[in-house]
Image (cartoon, rainbow, N blue to C red):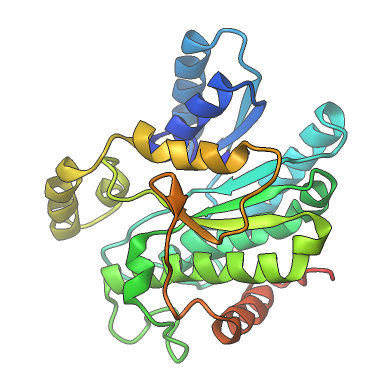
Length: 278
């Protein structure tokens, strides 16, 4: 299953997965977007096995609701097994906005939503000896965790908030691997590179919108970025490396270490009011 599946990288990943015989659960933000995406995919792959769910994953109650629907579907159609979870949903914000829980929205969607969804589906992933992919970014290499102000309440900076959320993706994958590799779980951060999508044009101010509109023109098509996700979802033996981009393992930041990863994991459990087992 993949979040952020109705457009951009997520949609292209759906295309490649269906083309390679996968059964897919897609999650998008709105009913309208999901209906359009579903029709486009079915027009291209008439025999595709795909369903779409939708919800605002910035809000934790929506993540839990979606997870409940997914677990019901897996129970009825897949013997409760989930082979791969691709946490791809993300956003950019020009100003400080918060979720219903009071968390800065880039932190809430880009990090906590995937963290919480992974927890809710973890029994299914264990059964499926699943692979967990987080859409990170090369920008994580230019950031340190702002432990004293994770939510950027004192001086909001859109780009730094985004970079931190992508570092969080890497730290989460690090801990999941360390704790659960012996149970068959494999977790990865994926760098899709600069991709021509509309992520910087959604719910952003005119400056961010303008900068992204100019920058994305130099990006690759989302289909190219999707190939790395397909690589990590195929092959009988999951790769051992943590960070992938452009179809191969990549070096990652020295900030991705056990101390930071353990600290973030514990804090994220508290912010989501959950506890991973094991």
